Length: 81
Length: 206
Image (tube, rainbow over all chains, first blue to last red; front, side, top):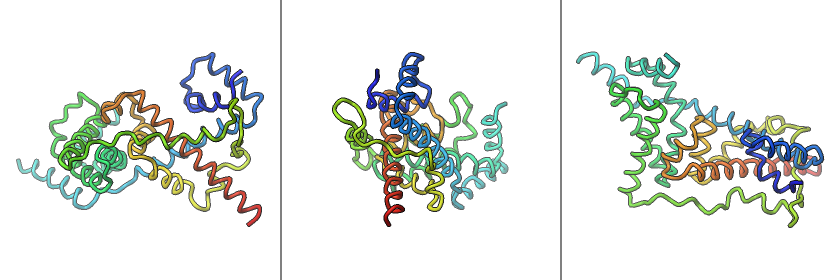
């Protein structure tokens, strides 16, 4: 039987679906009997979601006017070639 | 033709919306990558800007043999490396694993819980942190991580880049990329857990 510590060390791989069937089964068995580790695995899953939604918010940054001007200049150059 | 191919064609045609889109998707990760290589946040912003100039200049010659994403990040990594060399900075070694070692003090010697985790299932962090905007709190935690972990997190979780590609950019092994990712996520989970426990205590006896 896995210890709580062993379960938590594998929690990310478990949540990511990176474990083999046997390792997965051993963790599931432990989780059936352990409320704390169930909370921990749940926290790990929620953390992943929070990280992804936070980083996708970061993906909206705007191009500076200088950079857009450089992009426009480049296109303009091509047009006059 | 997939979405990226179309984006490349539009970029080559000078489509400003396409440029704004690709900038929005990658710029944050580029800054974090440059920061990880140079250990300097201010020059990281400059390197990202400079990379975009090179991307604008080079897009016509880009033939799509590598993915656009890979090409963009290789330009950034190369610029960051020459900048680090010029500034006489060698890349910082992975700061000893102070982050992510938080699991250590939560268990007794036999591996059972000494300090059990707070329950997140009754009240989700999104709900608890809603008033303070969960993402701002998570962003502050990410910005506190060692730069190498920030870059890896941003490339994997934000950009879905495979560990092997990131390893090549950062001149390290895919195994190390996974270890750093693991530490970054665990640090964030632990900080949220502590923040939530603290907030609950304040609610109970303010």
